[in-house]
Length: 602
Image (tube, rainbow, N blue to C red):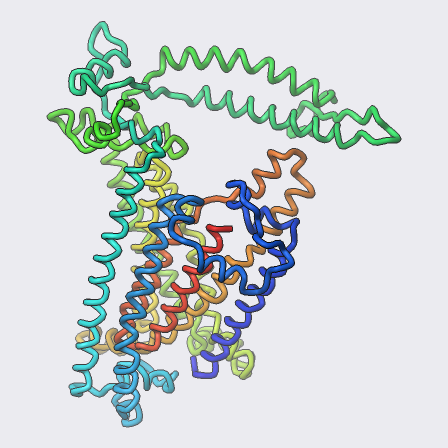
């Protein structure tokens, strides 16, 4: 990649962002789109647009996001979201304070050295020389100028430790305030108990649990709720809810069919066979009412049978005191580690009921198997990612696919391909992974959705660092220097180290593409908007279905946090080698802070 390609990439990405921002301004000003752009305000009962749609300009959203307070974030989206913004602002602070020293000091130190011109460049190739002059690769071997880069390393380390310490204090305060809040939540009075021993003779499961915890907490124990195997009940309930939705939909269609010329309307019909395509044709409203009346007694009978016969070795125990519940969640309740294990009770909407009954050693085995699968996935994913890194460079494309030479050699096409091809290939390849990691984390036996997201987030981060950061760096260098290493194996470490500055330009473009195009798409919400209007026009017939179509999800922490952490890793690692990456990191987290705040407050 040469300087022209880099500038083209940066300019094009910026123009795309500006277009997407203007598109967002126009679309968010249309009342029919308010459910997509202001869902949280609508759910909280606030006015979607303060001052009216006519008063908005292209930067109104930025002003509103910037003026929102931490308490606004907590009130709208909760403490977890507030902690995420602490993370973004902390990283932004680290990069800003690091750049205050590194940019005015290291850039001139590197730019005024002439090693590149004299042939002593530490880069693995002689491309992109204009930007190499601003990097550590422009410094000659054993030069006294390298001391400046060493001092810069200590400065970045000091700033990072200090900002992380301040962030830890802030997050601890947020957590303490949430726990001391007068707005109490049911889970604050409860604990989740697993690995309950076999039933003693003459006792029910509930009697066993109640007697055990009454003896330990005689004054504050309130009651217990035994976990049951609800697979059959849930299946019947889902069938019942399905028929209720179909009935509401049929009634809505019937109401819409009534008009002045035909006040009696047209009653909807459907076929009872496979997918409603075959079978007897019946009146939909009557048919769904009959099915509901038929299923309700069956569901109630199965509920009673489940409570009586399908109790599991797990329970949720409630206390009359939050302090007791917090203390119990951190205490041992048996001498053996695989008996009476206790943790904090998750929120009701976070519970993964099937995982409650998994025994201690079962969970341990599952965890080890999952870790092995993740390790193998990381290893085998590194092969195609390294291949993509090497294959998508134009020089390698010309070697491997000679028939493309005539196309690639055209200046306009070459500039566009060098600017975007490797980065887009990598981003698309990584998009396939998150759901697989969420499935693996759930298979470990984790009892709550938020914990599953946290576990998947950690796996995704390790994957990103090992494959994207290290894989791209090592893969690209090995592909071009394999024959040299084969002849002189002792030079492998030196060659790989020399390849670091050359890869800085790839990551500069990667970060720019992520924050301009990635955040631009997130701000505009084009895809969710199109999906919502298609569903509303062709699928949604009831208010409940419309609300389900626009209802906002969470911030997708399982992919968002590790993605941000990858950028942190890249920018911090290259902040000394190529200080020019720092402004890109600042732009990524500054823009991210602003746009994510708009998404949450909207």
